[in-house]
Length: 178
Image 1 (cartoon, rainbow, N blue to C red):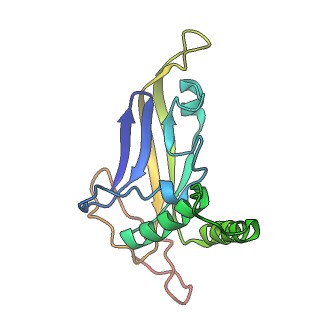
Image 2: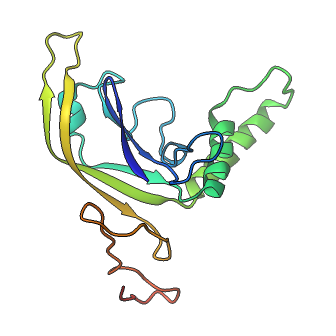
């Protein structure tokens, strides 16, 4: 499910599974859309020193996402290794740690992802009052495109959601009509 999750400073772009497991929903964008510890295209808000005006002018916003829990779990493990501190009990050499880090980054770069893009079509902001104020995002009108494999089982089309399979390719690379 595609969601814009509201916060005090704007919205966060999220994709979650429709069915939620017992631990709460996994968020399928953050694990494959770096950077992981700073401003990121998922944040349509005034965090990280971004003004409301800058936030709405950053369009389109491109992001990656995984399609299922198995992909999420694998990507989560890689990101956890890449960005987490090592415990004091980890006595590996600097060379071993550097090799692990390079291997994990390489695995993340090769990780199969789907891609999305959110384009802001219109918006209303309240401008900043002074240099300490970032202003606020009052509302946005947007369009989102999610590119997934042709065999992905999408939800039923609706007036707000449609599926265009016109550029799908079958396993031989030939275009299919859908």
